[in-house]
Amino acid sequence: MKRIIAILWIFVLIIMVDHSSENLNFAEMTPESCTVFTASMGGTVLFGNNEDVGDKSSTVWFVRATEKYYGWVYFGFRNYPIIRGHFPMGGMNDQGLCFDITSIPECRMSSYPGKFPIVNGGVFGETVLRNCKNVDEAMQFIEQYDLSSLGDMQFLFADAEGNSMALCPGTDGKMKVVSKAGVYQVTTNFNLLQRNQGYPCWRYNTASEMLSYIKSEDHLTVEYFLEIVRATCNQGTTYSTIYDPVHRVAYFYNKQNFEDVAVFDLKEELEKGNHSYDAFRLFPKKAAEEPEEPESPGEATEPEEPQPVTEGTSPGSLSGFLFAIPAVALIILVALVYRKMKKVKEEVH
Image (cartoon, rainbow, N blue to C red; front, side):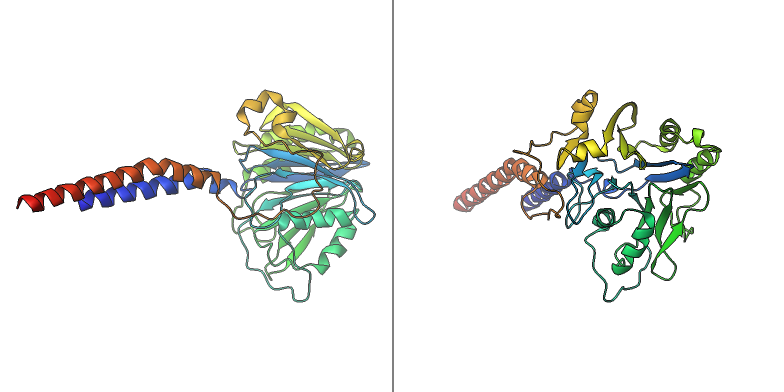
C-alpha cells in the first residue's frame, strides 16, 4: 500500500510539472531562424525581415518623438519570455534608420570596462534608433556601450541614405562592424565573422542570390522584396516586415499570409501619439487562430520604459495546481482507508 501511495504522489508531481510548463515552448524563446536583408540602388532603399520565433501574438508599437528622442515603430511580442524589460525585435525610426536581430551560436565576449550597460539586445536596438538618424551616427553611438552580453546576437542596421552595417561578435570577443559592400547585405543565423557554425545556410544563400539579380533601381521594389520574403520563410515564420526608409513606410505580413498586408505610414501613425496594434486584430481572417489579448483600459501607455517581469503565479502553474487537487484528495482517501484497515486488523489480532 505504501508503494501505491508513493506512485500516486509521483503521478501528481508529474501532472503539476507538465501543466506548469505547458505554455513554455523553449524553442520559441529566441529568433532561431530569422532572415534579415537590405538593398539600395539610386534613391531606393528597402529593408526586409522574416521573424521566425513561432509565437503567434505579434504586435506593432508606435512611439512618438520627444525633444530628446526620435519617434519610431517597432515589432515584437507582448508575451516574449525575457528576464528584464521588453524586447523590440526590429523597427524603423522617423529618420529612416532600421534594425533587426538574428540569433547566432554564442561567442565568448570580452568585457567593456567603464561603458554603459544595456538591458537586452532589443532595448539596445531601440536605444540606437531613438538616438541616431543614420548608420554613421550609429557606429559612433554604440562605442559608449558595454556589448559583452550580445555574444549570441547579430544586428543589421540600414538607413535612408542606402548605408548598412552588420554588428557581429568578432574573434577577439568584441562586437565588430561589417559594412555593406555593394548593393545588398544579408544576415541569418550564423556569425558573418565566424562561419564555423550554421553555415552554409539555405536562407542566406537564397536571399543573396535573389538580391544579386537586382541590376537597376527599377528591379528594387517592395514586390520583389516580398518574393524574397516568401522564398526564405518557413513554418516558424511568425511575421514578415518590409521597410521603405526613404518614404518611412512599413509593410507588415502576418503568419506567412502574403496576400494580406498592413501598410503603415510612419508619419501619420506617429501623429496619433503612442499606440499599438495586435496582429490578430489587423488580420481578422486569422483571429480564430490567435490568443486573446486583454484590452488595455484607456489610451495606449508610454512604451519607452522597460516593463519588468513581476513574480507571481503563472496560469500554467495555477492550472496544474487545480488539476492536482482531486489526485491529492484521492491519495489522502487511500491513506485513510489503509490506516483504518490496518487498525481493524490490529484489533482483530
